[in-house]
Length: 218
Image (spheres, rainbow, N blue to C red):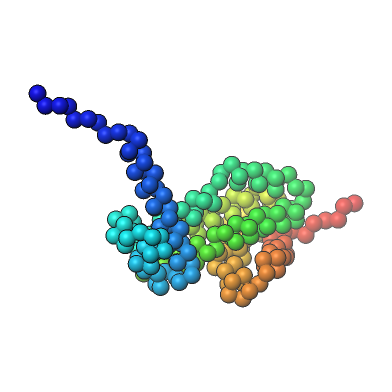
């Protein structure tokens, strides 16, 4: 009679899974730094592997190549910003403000804080879009998602206070254009505007363009 095959010890499987997750995270972090500093075209798998202290074969086995690697970097960055509970909390705080001017100012301030974190990720997407179909498709999808979100926020924060003839959808498009990752990167990175200057400029433009004139209190 042969001995029964002993089952694999669970803790060994967990250890290997934990080690694989740590390695994956280290590769993604290294790739993000290189994509941001060198651009998509200037980043190689060999450089990512060296920065993460792994073999190039490990990067290929884990991500399948450079397109899979940047997709993982972008996905991780987007997921880091996706906090539904926090999103609901700040939206409720803005809705509680008394005037549409105050709500618009607070909304812009929140968006600018978000853009400071996400704008570099969008720069990576733009850099990859010329050669990677998934990146071009992702840009289109993210634009549609931003437009839908801005339309929702516009209804929540500014309903009944838009200029005559301006629809919520039109207001959302204008908000999206002035607070796009592309324009944020142009002004704050390429042109060196301080964050406060960018926020003040966008706020003033949107107040003039979106809001109806408020009647003075009698």
